[in-house]
Image (cartoon, rainbow, N blue to C red; front, side, top):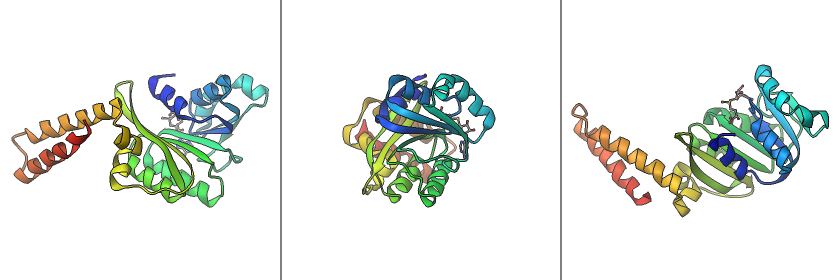
Length: 216
Ligand SMILES: C[S@@+](CC[C@H](N)C(=O)[O-])C[C@H]1O[C@@H](n2cnc3c(N)ncnc32)[C@H](O)[C@@H]1O
């Protein structure tokens, strides 16, 4: 597993039935079963071709009936799991999958999300579906930054700042989050230094950079 996948794996709580939605390679489900962190696992992907990779990797677990594979759009064809992961896909796809799972009564107790973009929308949507944030933090892995959102069924509400940056990031200012903010400030400053931008745009960039300084 690469650093992104290792960070996701570490964030998943021990559970009975783990579902890896959009699993592709299946590395996380394999690690969950191999480490004993879950009793059983569902591997699922909308692409039958992608799922073959995971089925090969998990063949021993499939043979002993600790893993089952499903070609599925989100949770559509899956039995209920207590814990699910949706990682490495866009935020719009994640909210769409969660919306359908909610209507079908298939939302799990624990949800781990790693959106590739629109993390703010994903946080708001999940909290609107009656999830509370357990942990919500940025990891720097393989030359990029990723947000990992760990949720459990329960009541919660988000401040605009928490929705934008992640609660754990705001409260604990972890090193990887600070690094991400420093990179953002650098980009804003170099954009503001260009000759060919309007004065109000430059002022806006500089203000954004200044507002971010409190996090580093
Ligand atoms: C970039 S891979 C991510 C794999 C893995 N989750 C990870 O984080 O490394 C995206 C996977 O999402 C699958 N996918 C896309 N839309 C999906 C959907 N609606 N339901 C299930 N899987 C989907 C694709 O087939 C692909 O295998």
